[in-house]
Every structure is written in structure tokens, then in C-alpha cells.
Length: 209
Image (tube, rainbow, N blue to C red; front, side, top):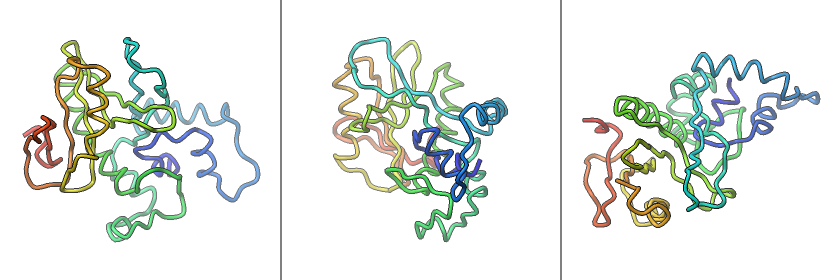
């Protein structure tokens, strides 16, 4: 569970998670050995992954299919990793580590956003996925989809947004056109607004208000 906590917000492979869970041990368990534990933790919604978006259209050619890892609550992940506020703010991720593009604090913030997005999506009869190309050239943190179209959501652990932060959302619009009914970036900022390009910038604290 601590290794899955360290993988929060990532698409880390089973091998990387296993290696993080067994650091210092020469003998590594086989995938078949751990599968029952992973299945049970998932059934109990302790491990709560978001599956990859595999659209029916042919607008994409290199999409990955690995799920994005989350636990039921980011507080549980922080507790399992024995990380305090000071640890997280200093970037001290502790002894259980999995290489990723971002920080543990960023992954936990994204996990908190995932809780809200999933709650509101379920109420609206929508499903939540993530999108990532092989190699990570393009990715969108959350794809919310129902019969009316797609909402693309990025999560940014910062209060300000600039043009490079919306590049993946712009790429998504180029691929699916009018199927993208809206785009949003969830931030730590103080107020919600719309950028000139139409992307909504919404503080996590105001999401759903």
C-alpha cells in the first residue's frame, strides 16, 4: 500500500511499484502472487485507479492504456508514507519512492482533485478517465465523458496559469474538435476566471460551488 501511495497520480508500472515495495530484498514476488492483494484492495476501494481513456474515434494513434494510481484519500497516502506537512513542503518524499514527472505533493493535490471530479461526474451521469500518449508527449489529467461530449481537466499545483499549462488541452481540442465541450485547469489560486482562449481556471477550493 505504501508503494501504491508513492505512485499517486502516476501511471507507474506494476514492476516499479513492486520494486518500491520490496527495496532491499533480492527475492521479488511474481505478479500472480500479488494479484490477489491488488484485486482485494481495489474491490475495497482502497486502491482507486482511474482508467485510461480509449475513445472510439481514430483521432489518436499512440494512447497508453495503463491506469493512473490513486488511493481512496490522499490523506491515507500521506499517512502510509509517514509524510508530514513539513516533509511535503520541503520535497522530502521519504524512503518509498517511485520515479515520476512530478512531486509527491503534486500527486496528492491531484488525488484530492480526483475525489471532487469523480463525485461531481457521478452526479452528472459521467465517467472519469485520464489520457496519456506513450512516452508522455501529451497527457490530460482527467477526461470527463458523457453522452453530450468531453470535458478536459488539467491539475496544477500553483496559483497562476500560463500558456504552456494549457498546451495539452489545446492539443486535445485539435484532436476531437467540438466533442470537447469545455476545458479546465484546477489550481490553488484565489479566484475562478476564463482565459482569453476559453479555458476555465478554477481553484480546487471553489470546485462545485
